[in-house]
Image (cartoon, rainbow, N blue to C red; front, side, top):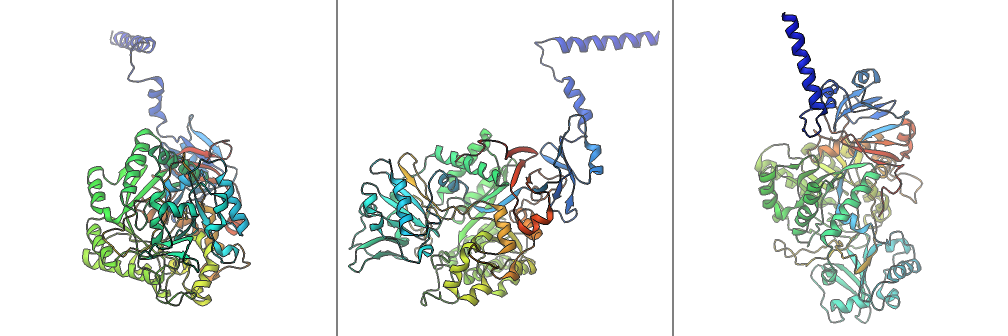
Length: 624
């Protein structure tokens, strides 16, 4: 009897289940797939096999297989250790020996500005006046009268050193204002139309902290240097919200093409620029992208130091991240200018300008007071410093932070750390200061540094990557993409520093009203790694200071796990370790030896959170 009751009960359950499954209007709380998914939850969604995986994890540097479930890594190791995670729904990807790396982390970019300039022509690499004029002529064709022709990237050193003048381009741009910034962004050329629009004449006084270059008769030649650019840049139209959103998406896709899965975006912020620009982009672009599912890469944002109270309040309200896509990194400011414009702050004068020691861009006491307050509340600080004296000042500032606010894991960052007295490398290590550096810049700077600093000084002080590592400092690689930009500011020198002297031009623009030309310091981590390993400028046959060359492993770590550490994300990304987000790239090579020696591979595919987001086989994936 009990057996009969049990049989009837089982039959009733079966009938009820069939009814549920066949009743179309009933919303089922479960399905057959969901029922079976419990059994599959122990298995991976994706397994890589027959791969040469560099993990950036010192506990397991290399592996041949990796298992991923959802957006995170389950296991990394040999195939036998992964095999048990392969279920009937697992996608198994045999990579036939190809090299796999953690997704690259770009430690210093201006993402939206990079996206804006991608749709415009460039003046980089121009080697003579004729080519310069031809580029501008091409940009001027077909545009409406009165529309701006903006651009940059020119480097007069490439054609012997003579500076361009307005008369080069006046005849081909009689009805349009032109502004073309130099590669370092610290000077620009205006045509006569633009000079008239800005009201710059023979009688215009020299601005504090800048120069209007003049002919022997006192007439402006068209060149405006440093703060003199403030006379021109406010005239340039501003980019719309729609254009900035498109620029962010465009730049993100370009990053994926290069294997970059995370960037540290230091924003549209330069000395003299209002801090609101970065906050406008956070509100109008990043929050929009997060809420609408338009984030393609992970972004760590740095905000202007003068807005530190605003960032602290935001962190109180939303925490330090929006999901796994947008991270609120910290604050940034500027200590000096650049070597190319002879405004990097140095102990000794420039060789070609014996009375020039460079420039303290932002008042040091102002930096100190504001960093102490922000640091007290646990916010990370990053400071732009290029010259040897500027770097030492920032190392001393970090010591003051420690003595004032106590010892903690603050990961103070110095952006660029380009020229250092040898003793400074030891201080970086002793103080656990991050050196956020741009290896590709050394390829362009080698000749200029020797010209401006002298051979011995340039050799001993420039791009000391190996010395920094030997001193136990952390390196984080970036590109500063893009280098040369122009910006529409309502330029008011910040009240906190009435002696602000340097302005980095940066373009915000209305694409319907003008054309721009730019130099691109390419977002290219494989290029940065190769530059750090070889240190060989394009026109050289040997390395520039070979004792500072890095090994391939050290260079890879600077683009992955150390870069993640530099922005407090090493618990989430930076290495292919169990539990971390599954961001990785597949390269074209299947030879580690060849890759280590030549760094000549290309990116075949990029994955973010275990999902394929770029493949070289996808026609039309990226289009400017």
